[in-house]
Amino acid sequence: METKRVATLTLDDGRSIELPMISGTLGPDVIDIHGLSALGVFTYDPAFFSTASCTSEITFIDGDAGLLYYRGYPIEQLAEQPDFLEVCYLLLNGELPSAAQKKNFVEHVTRHTMVHDQLARFFNGFRRDAHPMAVMVGVVGALSAFYHDSLDINNPEHREISAFRLLAKLPTIAAMAYKYNVGEPFIYPKNKFSYVENFMYMMFATPAEDYVPNPKLVRALERIFILHADHEQNASTSTVRLAGSSGANPFACIASGIAALWGPAHGGANEAALKMLEEIGDVSRVAEYVQGVKDKKYRLMGFGHRVYKNMDPRASVMRETCYEVLEELGLENDKLFKLAMELEQIALHDPYFIERKLYPNVDFYSGIVLRALGIPTNMFTVIFAVGRTVGWISQWNEMIAEKGQKIGRPRQLYTGATRRDFVQVDKR
Image 1: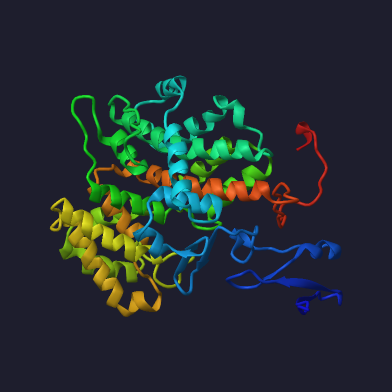
Image 2: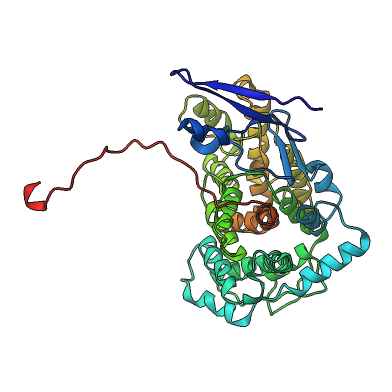
């Protein structure tokens, strides 16, 4: 029989309570603090640095060891071998698909890539220069106005249909946001293309000529989608879960995740890294910039990570992809790439960066890759959203299916005014 493990909390007034300790399959133990309400106290943990908000079987991160697993599979293996929809099936269902299951899954996603024609008219309500993420928040949220037949979140079949629709339609909507922004006509999906090929086709094709996807560039974008598919309880995923805990429909929940991702501290990291390289401008200025970082004059973008205290496991895959793309496009001597490699070498060998564990992260390389693919910087976070959608759906579905699921309600430490009485305006 397993021994009950507890942590004992003793208050300064002598009262104490035993709190159960719980172990997961991987990672540190947690202390169940539900019983604290009996003492009339609760915990204070700004930004949830030390708080587990849920249980989950989807993604595991060990920041100290530099590990990232989807359903137990290391990210390095998933980025190299399966395609994106195979990874999507894994995240959504918990296991890799058989050949028959994969075929059926791909067919379902492919059949849902079109969007309602009236939805396309929504774009005319935005200014042409609207940020694509603003468009994404609005249009994805509006999906709930078109698909009333799958809004019962307590019905597993409805949740499955909504998952297919979101996974399939996000690339179409993202490509339409891009086309609207640059003033080109919308390009509709073709069923002969794979998921990623279809997205690139809708992004870059025009009615004037045929578009043939380059397999190496398709694979590069596929890796970006896989590497960003899920990342445990980050800000946008937590937003999706919190919105979903109220019973909101899945389209609204994913729109809330897109809104959270839009923040520069979350989804804008690769854009910030690329902007930093552009500001440095030339290899000759790298040493000066690095010294400026040490002197706190400049910020180093694309290095270090909130979670990973070691090398970001996604970074090595993205670095290899970066080299492959630039070689394929004949951009090995690209000014920004050479600058980035010089900065990378200094950071990997300079004691200042090594001691602080400021290793290049996935965003450092992904911005260079996206730029090489011809994707403008204002679309970088949209690409992130397309890749992350499957993670959001998986996390949302896991939460809704959980027995005894309750609406999220964080507490606060109130520091405002104490009770006071209202005074009429002529007596203030």
